Image (cartoon, rainbow, N blue to C red; front, side, top):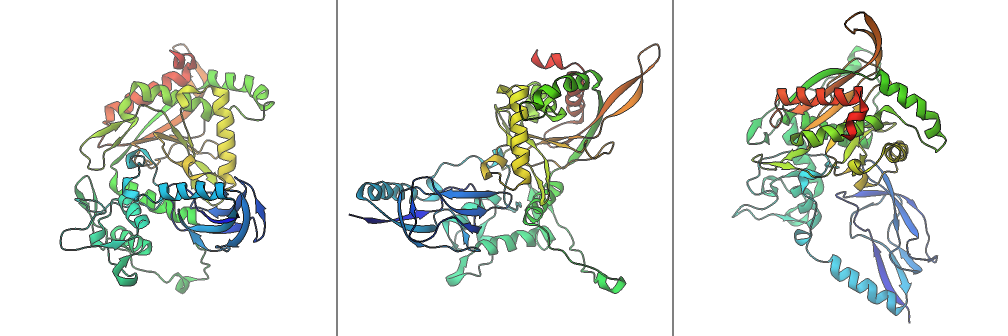
Length: 431
């Protein structure tokens, strides 16, 4: 006997209200387990939602343009009794309150949504005498952003706080109407006055991409709340570049490239092991340092829609060729907008390379909750004195930005010098 089963949006990370951009099935279709049903577009990636059960589609509950979140019903199918029982078990499990589910600590993730910091003695909870009403997804997002829901103005039905209310509160904080806090210190910014640029000549207004809107808020928060200092240095990569070029053709035959970034990843892992305070994050209350025992490196990728930072995990366990393959795959899918949310989370340290474009140095913004980021500029030949004469050497500019609350200038200088010595003699990485 056939039974109806609801197929819902599975766990898609910390994303909420994700637009449906494509329907891959129609009513009446017969589907198998793991068949793709719809395509969603998150802030920085697209993803296909697979079928959790097999059966015949009775109804589709979404159309192109709808926004869905975890748990929303996508379709209803007819399945046999066995499928129905399995579905009931899964629904019962997923129905547990979100507050009781285990999630990764915030300080170990890159926030995928526009972050902000606000005063919160008890984040995401109502103060006594001021009860708040919000859905579990809104409360989860509030906890993520460390926003006190009792300070948010509700506009939803019956006084409920909506996601838009939460974002409006964050924008108000960042515009200077309120105060932003980080580690107990306050900061207010006077909002800029609007300017009518059309008075001075012809203009064209272009909307920002979704990625730039999200990334912009994240970068703005980091720049305002993290005391940045940047340490600059140069590495002689003459020998390293000769080694890379001698093996690049061989690696290309395997469908990938042996780029300088691959060597930078291994050198950074070695440095993070020697300087563990760089492989850390501040606790949410700013009172302790969370030292990480894993080594996940984020690589900034320039895409047509804006900057994204996919994360290569367990870099200490992978060789150069494996890192090269993974970097090629992640950067390619990043430019196509096909990264999964989990592939942009969990970073420990980031690398941003502008070497393919140019420049001699820059100040990369720390990708909080990380505490440091390495900027790499274009290498160039320079005369270097060897004790007897000037020799042409290929010099690579490095720019290390760091959170001065966690890292002192002396340690930053030692960290960059450590990187320099490893890049100049890569054999030392294996020591």
